[in-house]
Amino acid sequence: MTDRTLGQTREIHMQVMWNRLISVVEEQAMTLLRTAFSTSVREAGDLSAGVFDPAGRMLAQAVTGTPGHVNTMAEAVLHFIAEIGRDNMFAGDTYVTNDPWKGTGHLHDITMVSPSFKGDTLVGFFACTAHVVDVGGRGFGADGKSVYEEGIQIPIMKFAERGRVNADLVRMLRANVREANQVVGDFYSLAACNDVGHNRLVAMMEEIGLDTLDDLGEFIFSRTRAATLDRIAALPKGVWTNRLETDGYDQPVTLVATVETRGDTVNVDFGGTDGVSRWGINVPIIYTKAYACYAMKCVVAPDIPNNWASLEPFTVSSPENILNAPRPAPVSLRHVFGHMVPDLVLGALAQALPGRILAEGAGALWNIHMSVRPVAGGTGRRAEILMFNSGGMGARPEQDGLSATAFPSGVMTMPIEATEHTGPVVIWRKELRPGSGGDGQYRGGLGQVIEIEPAAGHEFDFSAMFDRTRHAAQGRNGGKAGAAGVAMLDDGTPLKPKGWQHVPDGRRLVLHLPGGGGYGDPALRDADARTNDLAKGYVNGDLE
Image (cartoon, rainbow, N blue to C red; front, side, top):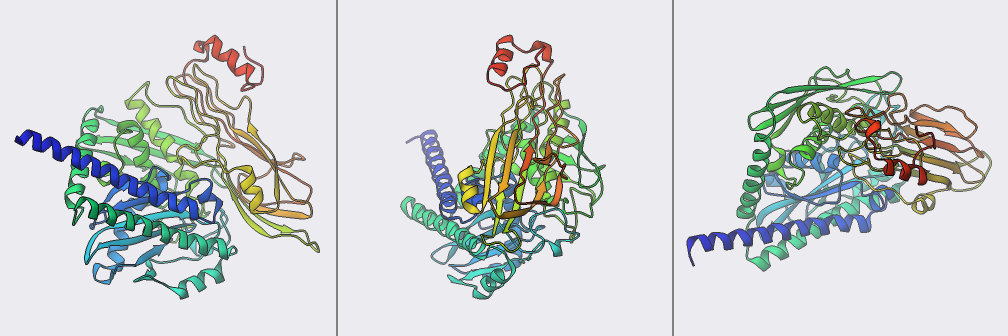
């Protein structure tokens, strides 16, 4: 065979192994989906899974998973390696943390990392993350004044050593959380997920005849990095700044991002953003970086696999502020402003790449955590229920925005049946919200209308985690703003967009989720598209 033929054969062989590696992490993620106890994982896919080389560099991630989990996990593994130490790692180990600054940004996310040995050789690591229903403390909400109020903190430590689970840690968990069976069950699901990844990896290596992943890793990183740098080289050179106004907790919060192309890198700086909040809406920089890099990759390199090499050219800097909050700032709702970061960054990129960037959308999920109980003197069931809901995406340069779609997180909608099965609530209404998408040549995606009532003889407190109630998603290139969100009781009583509040027996919580902004001059909208909007009830019938 010629040298060229040998080179082509090796290229094909490496590509096949790369695909096999991706299938390994996909099965890893599917294990977590199938075995998880929490509906946020099992139904919504609020998780991540990935495989790493012995140096802690991410080789591949599962498609199922949020950018916030995946991209923070990519950095978190390095913290695990540093704190556990190579000499203290053994086959059958599993390590765990929910440290917001070394994991995924808040205490409700559990990250587990497991070393993968082939014989006596450490060939890599498997990592996974999932959101659990409860970590104790004040519960999932913005009302804490420091991270110490927000729940149990688990430093990087061993969940299992040589296959033996740390029973003391499990007892501590059970004593500190409200839904012990669900939470502990999810811990075991996370550990099992990594075990499946390890078993499939070793089987693949034995089948192919690999002793290490070194050559495969070099193949993955070299190809990915070269492709990413080619895309960055094609970008305009310059500096662009964008501001985004958000609701905040008790006063508005301004977010600022400056995007700069710097040779082989693109940097986002968050200088000018408002300072650290006294409420639990702050964001550790690890989570801010995760979504900033995601936004840049969506525009610059959307089709290039996400791994260490494709993430490295995208950098983030920030002074101390609400998007770079230091310990022990309260960070429970770090996702709200973390999910606003892509719109913030994309607004800057729209100046560099006119005509290519979608309009602003709802951004943050409208999560609800409900703590349900029987009324005083009554009998019934107590439950902690977490429900994810999505507003509309912004319109795109050549298409309408997607309705009720979780961008940028990508989590799935929880089925009503699954939510009602979790605890004593009734969801009376969950439908698209007519007229909520911003007008334009391309219409913004629609939000939803949701009505939730405690079952007869019950009441619930709920944690509101909403934004864009006073600052709607803005259109782009002449498109109109989407509708702002509204939270109230069914008797018209207005509710706050953030914080714990009460829904009594016999009343309903009513949510009008925000819509996405429109794109382009509304006068240019196709007549057939307007007729279709009216026929399907996407608008209220007041078309001009």
